[in-house]
Image (cartoon, rainbow, N blue to C red; front, side, top):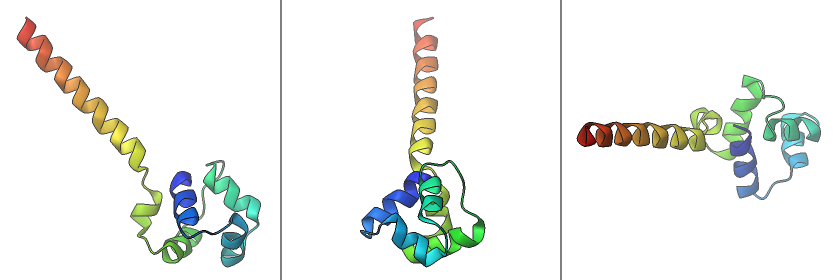
Length: 87
C-alpha cells in the first residue's frame, strides 16, 4: 500500500507535505505510510483515494505482490507438469 500512495502522489507531482496538509497530518506521518512503517486509518484512506481519483481497492492492494504470487503459482504448476511428463 505504501508504494501505491507514493506512486499516486508522485503522479500528481505532490510532495509529502502537500498530502499532509490536505489530510491534516504531519509530513512524517505520510512518510511512515509510504515506507509502510505505519498504515493510514480508513478515514485517511478514503480521503487519499478521493484525492488520487482512485478506488480504495486500487490504493490498498499490492499489485506487485499479486504478480509475484501468481507467477510463483504458475511456476509451481509448470514444474509439476514437467515432473509428470518426465516420470
